[in-house]
Image (cartoon, rainbow, N blue to C red; front, side):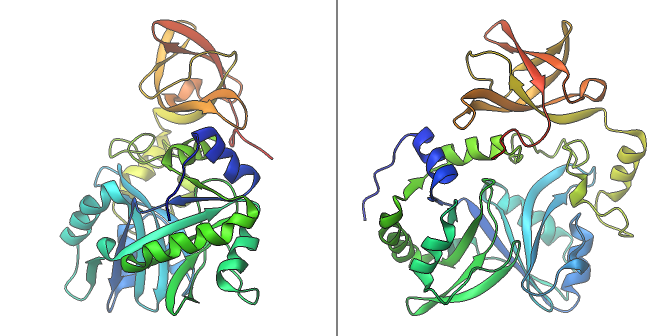
Length: 336
């Protein structure tokens, strides 16, 4: 079925105000299984795998030896000793190589990214579209849970997750079923005025919620505490890659912190790599920036020196040689 894409602003509002579908084929899928898989994986990731029951998932990080973020991902426990890692596609090969390097003989690691496709359904009318696709007697799993459901003679995996700040599900299926599911979602979504959404719209949605993007706000040179994501790091675990560095960062405090900001006047949008100033002194750099379609205002995220990383602090963003005033804000930038 041909898809007529609209503007990023229209796609954005489709998710905030109705229901939006966007392709998530940019995600990779790694499957880990075998005796001792849970223990091994708990030493590779920052969050605590032992807290996961079968059928549940959690947001977490894969770190290098310096505690830099190789990838942020969601891990689902799909069996007693079986796990699905949904990773960023641009990092899939790097993730796989790093984990393969540390893989014990009794654990199996498979990269099944080429075998799967996925679609995310996000927005206030999620349940209506979900029931249209799966039947009125079917219900999506709870938040951060995953379940296999029948669909058109096959089986799909439905996870109650998303990266827009709206209620939603991410649905995974064999790559050969991708066109069939996509067309079914579009057809069943017509009564709700559904609009397909692309990654440009998702980027504005996640920035309003202050959700970081790997490769922009997260990188191998930054650790989760600097990024303000220590909640997803369990330092009570006795051992995992990067733990010692993170303990030191927590004890001494990070040198820089990732903060959200909002421009104080209308003007050109802030963009990645623009310099951040305070009282004429350069204190950091923008990592993500946009004009928020919901707020109709310039917003973004930046790493700034810890001494200046205070809510309400006044800063300036240098855009094309001019400085524009902004304020460091509390997360999230968008609130219903």
